[in-house]
Length: 441
Image (tube, rainbow, N blue to C red; front, side):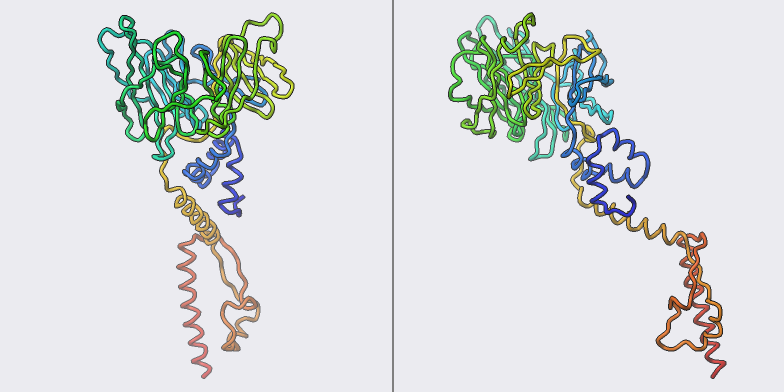
């Protein structure tokens, strides 16, 4: 691969899994410089493989989505209190996790690098009870910044009112800032924000009333403001819902008690693009299995959808046949939560944007290395037999660098000693030729 262009080497290495790339990184200084560039990290991210992170109490595991077997436990950087850990969000291979002490870490488990975030501060209003807190994590492409959103929700039971405190952490500033409160009440405190189209999504309601319908609210990472997402035209009334990411689209799970309808927004932001993908009922499950209480889609793989049932089991749903097959993962208990994550080389810090200049510089370094490797061998010029006899017969058209005049040998000279020897030898030859011609005349 030493003679291949930088672009070809980059293409080859970008198709390898993270583990293989990290091994190659330690074999050569030039490869390490290439793999550490922003260009390569982002290029590898565009071709990264999807993995599944499973949480069981305070333990986290990675599972290959192709086989869903042999879970590998990964050691996270946070202390565990009360035997619990929570996943707040995932984006581009970075995972936000927290413990019950509200310690938050931004972590890439594949390269084993993390960053502890500063603690967020909130003030509890008088006569209000702390109800819930949700988070959402994503990348703001407009500012090239990663943001963590924290929504703390308070309830006044006496007056049946609610309030919220919204804070945003940005990786560029490494600090939290306060935003205006959200005029909605959270419906589920255990869900993290779903990142689609540069916005984080939650299920909320407008009032603390039993007959109030649920709705989807989006927090735009660039504008840092909330807006409502229009539901499918045929979806009306009071029912439970959940949002998820499925096949790169915003997914709505409609639960009316008799079954679960799964809707996807094919074109984000267009309410006309809502499409019902499938319906899951208790009849799809085998007799004797627990009743469906909650179903969350995790991944779309061709004609199959990976579902998380009742926060305890995983199963595949076949879109063509409607069959359900449960996944048995050895070594993990029944209480699990899944998070889809990509395996990337992205560090928990901001990358610089000098990707192109880095690649050009690496290309120049490689060319210089080839030249230095050649010159470091050195070379030695010797005459052919009979060259001295022919020295006086050199015509104006014949040069000292004629291939028939010299033999080239390669002793182990360095580049600097080679240049000194070459120029000194050239001066001696010119001086000797001058003397020979002078004596003949």
